[in-house]
Amino acid sequence: MRTPARAPRWRLTELRLMGALTAMSLLALTAGLVLERVASTTAAPLVIYVLAYAAGGAFPARSALAALRARRLDVNLLMVTAAIGAAALGHWDEGAALMFLFSLSGTLETYALARTRRAVEALMDLRPETARIDRDGREAEVPIEALVPGDLVIVRPGDRLPVDGDVVQGASAVDESTVTGEATPVDKQPGDRVFATTLNRNGVLRVRATARASESTLARIVRLVEEAEDARPRAQRLADRVGPYYTMAVFGGALLVLLATRYVFQFPWNDAVYRAMMVLVVASPCAVMIPIPAAVLSAIANAALRGIVFKGGDRLEAAARIRVVAFDKTGTITRARAALSGLITLNGASEAHTLQIAAAVEQHSEHPLAVAVVEAAAARGLAPLASSDF
Image 1 (spheres, rainbow, N blue to C red):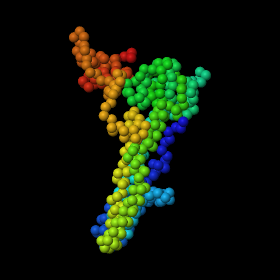
Image 2: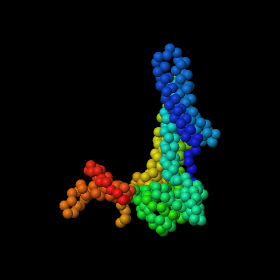
Image 3: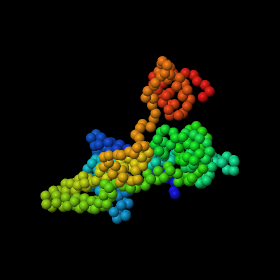
Image 4: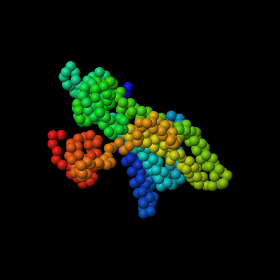
């Protein structure tokens, strides 16, 4: 099974380039609008608008050319054609504004995709790079990629487990929140199953690996997230299916508008072409199509970081139709963090002094209930008493 891949560096470079070109397009558009009002000639604004076209239209034009080479029509071709038409009619400012807005939408979509990729990578970043193993009674440190089922892994307090496995020696509390979402550590002893990236709290564990690092539970979760990104929702599938036909229909409609306004209504050629270009701009579905994949990918990634895995965008879309959720008898809905709800004292002892004593005993412990006691004392302004021999 493959290990979930990290985003290549060129993707990050492309995102930065897209952002820089979009910003350049905005600056050039703004400068052109200002120069039109203060410059004595039209040459200076024209040069600036050409720069706005080049910056804002670089990526859309590349996508449009790629679609044409593949004998496809897409929304990029619509927008680039409309911008070129606006320039041909002398409306450089409108064409530059169109290129900027389309460039901005593409940059935002790419940013959403990159953010999703970073969220998935954050899950895998929880893995340790190396692991300590016991080989014939000698401890050695090896890369986690070298671990195979059957290896005896030594996990010290404060370390994250490198692989899934079974505890064969030792006892400890393990924080499994990265896998299960449950914040309360789970006590582990010989025979219990443990998972990669979970945090060993307070005891040394010897774990027999049951799978390679690339086949851990977390790795499978990450792969599910990546596969879910490819499972597009119904709205996006519909848009992808009808997109080429829609584009042809829009071009056909623009041609009809051109011919009708010129020969039926006797408009001048400039006005007829301008109205045809407006059809291309207004009929562009980018405002509807672009947010669909960006929103779905962002939702899937954010859900994964919170321990919720959707098997696809279509499942995420189906979740909107859920009206009732049934929990079994062991199902719970909590804040996953213990809190002191009340204090009962005996023999006339004051609550404040009793809580101070309890906090003194618990202040050196990492157990969730101990943390709750210490936090309750701090919330009441009570300093823990000194304690020793913990």
